[in-house]
Length: 152
Image (cartoon, rainbow, N blue to C red; front, side):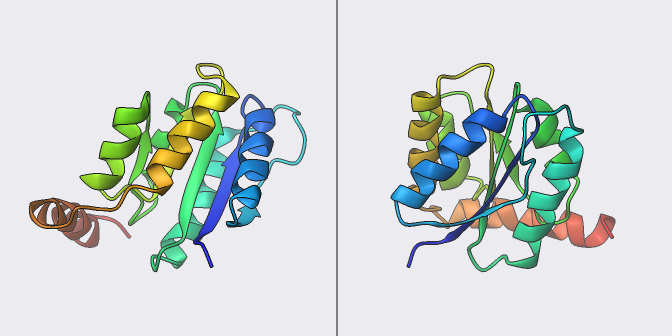
């Protein structure tokens, strides 16, 4: 069975979120949609926190995906959650490297920046890239140590 993916968006990312959910389900992932469930205007932060907190409760491999207009607001807000490493990706290379080097557990995508097909391709690269460990594990551990010392 593939990993569980928790996903959320704001109103600008609603349509892309639904497209990505369909793609994930076709690929055999278990998906939990944290909302919203229509395209009415919402506060993106509510959904970023909901996804971040769910991923943080299940650090055993549950991953998160957030979509808003640019992906910027979602990444800022999700990174406020302890143990979340949310990364805004801008291309296939950054999608790969954020997992390989930073073991990012939340992917952020801008719906107003990318076509659905490109977003799905970045998501696929991210999901199928393994964390390299080694010296990168030390770097990630430094992030975790800081959070343990400074975040509630």
